[in-house]
Image (tube, rainbow, N blue to C red; front, side, top):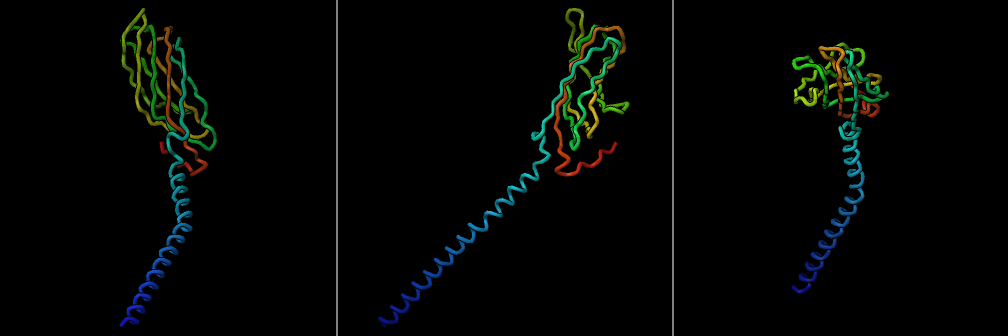
Length: 184
């Protein structure tokens, strides 16, 4: 009976040692195979992040005077391999035109005859000048070589008019993934 107990205890001890060995082999294998899995997850996260608006932010500030009743400001052309996405436009217009005169700002692309129309809000008058603003979200796309144009038209000429435009958005890098054509 005593020999059977020693034999049984030895067998249990062997099974415990073998179990610990399997656990150790599993841990070592997990450490060596986790590296590529982690690298693949990081690589996937970077690929998914290429069009993040914060990666290539865009801001343009343009001023113009409109003594003839209109003014255009051509902003720099979009560089090759990029696409510009304008997401917000704001402006202030200071003018001496009388109340009720059309103040008509737009956002265009070179070659287009129409664009995004920007409704203005009259803010008040001071020292013979009328103040208008607009501040709104926008969504306009510009491909390589195209220039955003900030345009102000008035229903009067010979005025003293000054406009200050701020355009914000981001660039997309079309070299990392092709940019599809924008349907107009």
